[in-house]
Length: 467
Image (cartoon, rainbow, N blue to C red; front, top):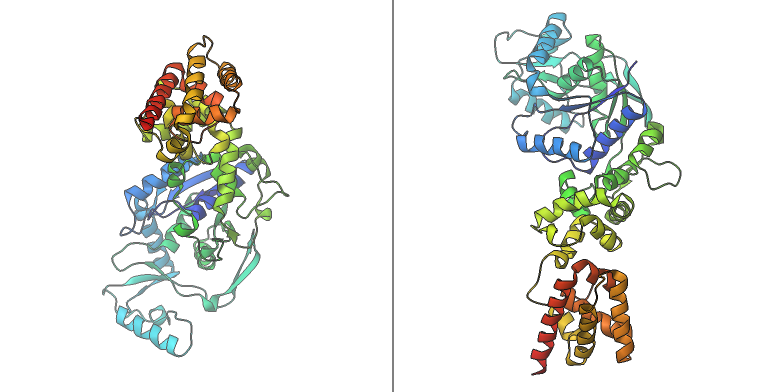
């Protein structure tokens, strides 16, 4: 039997951390088992589904490199199939028409709750269909005896009494099929063997199993993944740092870092923290997924991102960085190669956006200096050091980090000052601020002509202040 899993989001918003982890686990299980992965868009909620959300789902999956063999399928394009199955169920007696008004159902629910009972349909139309021809919904005729028992591949055996399950609606009055019916038909038609999804679906599982049994369809195996919570123990939200997948891209994360972080939110392999995609595909198993909720930690995610910035090939990271440079309208042809910049700034930056934010001075000239840095380091006493190093740099015929370092050292030696007395004024002069990578590689990357012009601007700033 070929293993086949699916990711089936509703297009009502972006893919967030929980959905992305579910997609990853389903994808990894299929890859580990040599199976297939299906992408399905469950868009029957027409009021809430949007094309923007559909685009965000597909863009997010592509950015994460979670490819699929089949799909994307759309439930709104399969309505005829669902309704044909419902009509067959009506003919076979596994479903029935319900004519109860909303007012009656509201009153029934209120009475049950007042009496301390679980709100559920009382089965009136299961036995009485005298209102034939009036508007109606269609309900599934759920078994009234026995239990639904299934073995959850993460949680073990789970049992639901059929007496606790409702005769759920499977088609609305206006004729549209309901989620629990659609997902069953989809899993059946698409030959899904394993359903890996969030634990918020556990209560749907016995209902779906009963429908599958009524249809004579095979029942897939189920695995329900625990929720992700914030460090305060509450449901994950934006205040915990959880955002849509594409926003993680916009904030400068690498897909490899996010996937590595997500796989460890509930799954482990010893004490290991770093997993490549190939590692994940080889090692992932559902029996190593935790039953307990996982805690989202932004600092850990940023640590992983920094690791991948510095350990993936610089040329690959540079391509990702290039997108952020374009977003900030930085013309990169006027400065160092991005791959070199990745090596230069990688240790200092947790995200590619940080890197793009902090590298402007390599590519764009500036007309003003950071006021605090200039007032601290570009004072009259710094003029000899700055003029001295300018002269040494101007005389260089071989513009390398080593030669720049030699010019700085020679200036310090001649003036009999510490290196820092030369380095800090030079750093502020050529970058406009007081922080940068090592000054020799920074000056080398900025270039000779641009560095000399900026030193001249700093000397003019000092002269003006001395007047």
